[in-house]
Image (cartoon, rainbow, N blue to C red; front, side, top):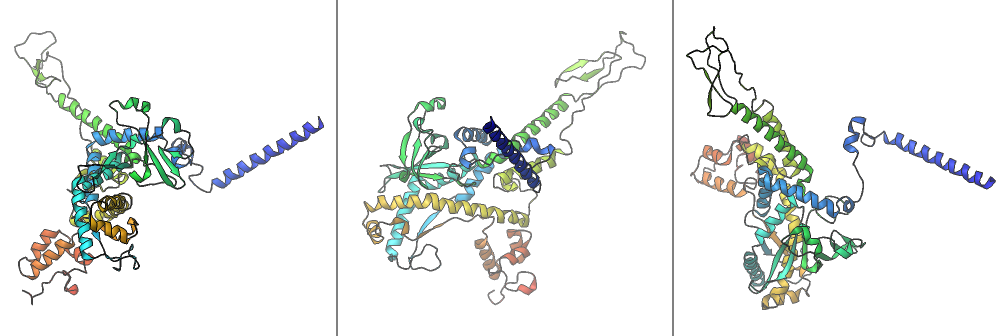
Length: 489
């Protein structure tokens, strides 16, 4: 009995200590505003979690996120346009081209002065062979679809497969939807499998892919095919630490997009009601009484458009008061579109395809930020897709091409060390160097006036001069304008 009382006292002391520690933690947490939100915000933060990325984005959660995003992508015009335009801008329309560089060329991050030197013939030969290969498999379209899938799927998988239809290299890229890479039935509790990807340490070992089915509701019946990681390319941009599967970029603004669509539908309903009730009343005689037979037949426009009915004497008809749009409709939609564009990593002009309120200066300001996003996506494409495809391309080409085989031997079969870089087409609205130089040459030769150059380039021409001091335009910086070189005229 005495021993029991001792443990009871200890337990009570431990409980008291725990309560005091919890109270102390609560008091300390009040220093930070969001740690203990006020009552009015408790409902908003009630589902907040600090779980690991792979825990909060489990298969069922990702499946629902992709389904919601695809519904918006397929049915909402601005979101569909925004996803498409992001893919177009990332590829530049024509896609990247390969440049094999000298290993001793300075200024390239991947150059190695101890690496073997390639001749001009070898470099040019590989560049042309890559051009023929990329055209044969339509690599630009693969890249565009991968970037577009970031919006509604958050990721895309490419499987490098044998294809005898492709000349010489005989391999192609097979696109695999994100939903097809998933847990195998027998591996859902495997500690090294995350979202259908088997890891060995930090690197993927294999991917579990279910076959294509006509009825996706029964895809769980199929045995997943285990694809080696060396044959699979997984393109996504992680946003959280320890994240192994992509999340749709549109996810953060899906609720806003849905609410905006519903709001527009309500206003459209109000407009329809107002249109259907646009009628008027013909006056009756002042002394007319109900039931009195008179010769006049006053009429009004009935709620059904085009229908005319007689109005009995003494009755009145009131016109519907539904109005559209309301005064706050336009600003509300504008503010929502700005939020949608930010969530999709776009500008509002790019999302809506509306440049009505843009001049050159404001549009270029938006493009400066947008260009950084496009550049980042291109860098990830180079690292995760293009370099992987190039290495497989060299392996296959070396089997049938003597020059490629000699290059592979020079680098001791370390294909990742072959010096190269990727040239992407510019975005015309931002990369205007070629246009600037062309206008400068035309004006210096006397073919165009300064006014004509301003009209061709935009309104804020002086700002262009400031931003492009390295170009031939700013020949006289103290004049505040463009002065042609009169000696060349």
